[in-house]
Amino acid sequence: MDNAIWKSKLKNRTDLMLKMARYNLKIIFAGRFFWFVLASLVFYILLSVNLVLKNPVLNSSDVYRILFFPGILLVFYPTVFGIQNDADSRILEILFGIPDYRYKVWLIRLLMIFLLTWAILYFFCWIGYFGLTPFSVFKMSFQLMFPVFFLGCLAFLISTVVKNGNGTAVVMILIGVFLLFMSNTFANTQWNVFHNPYSIPQRMNEMVWAQISQKNRIFLGIGSLIFLLGGLTNLQRREKFLK
Image (tube, rainbow, N blue to C red; front, side, top):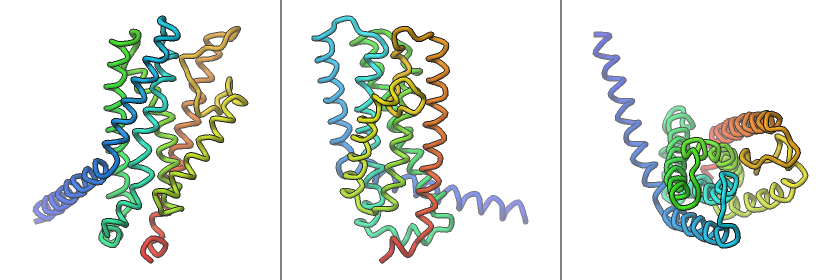
């Protein structure tokens, strides 16, 4: 009897997860996401052509710089506009009625968003491998996901506070400009969000740079988890979303 009840619960949970996965795929691919993918590809190609014309001999550092902003574009729309899309489709009330909303819906959605972004970046890396210069495709895509994950989780956190896609986009652009401005100050430190692990400064030991890169990835990883937990905590404040 207990075994039958356990199987029934497992089946119900599996069905619920599949339904949420299908819904979130619609959310991720809906609206402007296709245009963001297209824009990131065009942006990537234009940057590559421009760099090749200026410097025909490229290295992994150049490829990382070229792929950084297309990666940000890929994660921008689904993390910034996700909450607003739920509100516009009038699905928030249903979602908040599901126990442990943050774990059963948004964790799945974010996982799908980042996996999808990684898959597209992996494809872009292969284009760079054949079209620009040979490099480790998996390692490059993996390294790119650290800042992408960091900024994506930050955008998710801000979207749970602002609760409006356009407003969140403006805040994220301002933060991006500020981080870009501060990147010169933190250029050779672990605190630089735009840290390029392939760009070793002159007169710096490779081992020292490798340690800085490792600390930077730890910093981005911990920051991402803090932003993620903050956003998930905000989603528990049902009264602020259902007004």
